[in-house]
Image (cartoon, rainbow, N blue to C red; front, side, top):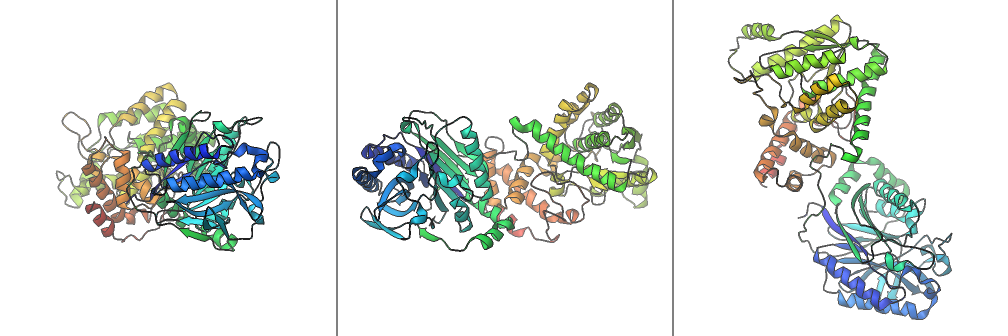
Length: 640
């Protein structure tokens, strides 16, 4: 119903140290509030029922009894709610006190998880009051009138999610308990914490959580003590953090005086897919897991939730604060790949077609920096402009200007006469502007590039991009072919940003204006004659759909293995107010139809550098039968 999304939350109550009844009222209020926004699992900070900073009061029978009474109060007052809550409190068991997480729902205690690693250094001295979970031999405990499972081997399983629990310092251990929990099946980890503040500690903490969630291919929900715990020598700022596989989903503002509820949506289906693909995860299970987990099954009702998390409509485009760094990195990968190919083949010359469009421009810019890096003269780059029946003055002049200002060797070879002769040879009506008319031009251009490369003992550098490969928007053995394809894993939406970045950071002023105009030029193969005003008539996105949609579909299909229904669901959120549902569905159908039918082109694509998390190389990331049927995928789209 929710396409794998589970709504989780971290709560930061304003604790009154030692006043369990008051704390219970705070906790109840937050649980009710979270239930109101359909949170399924809610975690509170460490020892939130009593307060973390009670010190030697933890040895007092009265405080322990008050904590148990407070929990019974919470159980009674929330017994009608579906939400699962995880509370921190001390529990006395067999004359020993444990720092525990208590998992509750609908008036029942589902399980108790004790803390394993007790910090006993600097400002921490928990071993003064608590015993480690490693000392616990029993599997059951009698508490609040209930016999409940207790131990670190507990996992909690609902129809939507399997989760584990660890407490504060457990995360800081060399091998946290959560590492074993995820190998036993936990998809999300909830951490009850009492991390006090210090200079730069928050940045380190965030890095630690991000790394653990990424290493475990898991969600990680972290709730740490807030303002009310600040006493004597320590200050607590309240930290609510929700991560998914290394990415921050939601966070709060620290140092707030009141209570806070941090809500986020974790895509469990995405995590499951990541684990299926990552064979190292499965291998780790075999090597490390010696015991199975005790799973507490919870009958949680399935109900729709409103997805509140932001869905990035342009997943391939870096965010503004890292755009420069990422563009530099991507460009450098492309350059390194081409440089290696040139050194390996001892080539001093490259040949590429320059159309005045985005893709050939980026390929040329990669060649220029590669030659500069190898201390080769730019004259070894031979750019050939090949005007045809659809070439416009705008793209033609931009191509000439670009080659001239960059200082490369240039040639102009018109394809018109050769194509006219070819049409006569195969008896094709030149006024019939069909696929034969278009592809003949693309193949003629490729033949010119290949033959000229033989003349000058050079390599043909391909210009086609990832989005075109996904859609099969390339002429087989035409622009589909080259000797090295530098843009092979660069999606169309990113090409524009890379060219713009180069214009702003890499080239002289005389080249900038041309690059900026190329960025603004409509995307077109220019294989159909221009309109009566000399403008581009054949616009690619009018024919196959907006590239921003296709790149969004491609990322969610290839990167995460999502179904068409889920991709459509995500697109509705990401492009709300931009495209209506009919448009989204139309181009989603086009994407899957073309992706499946055009695999044969990708099965023999040339080498090219892998840049991001997605590539369609048949030698690496994507191996698919050329005759695989799209019928099931298309049926699901039609039934939406």
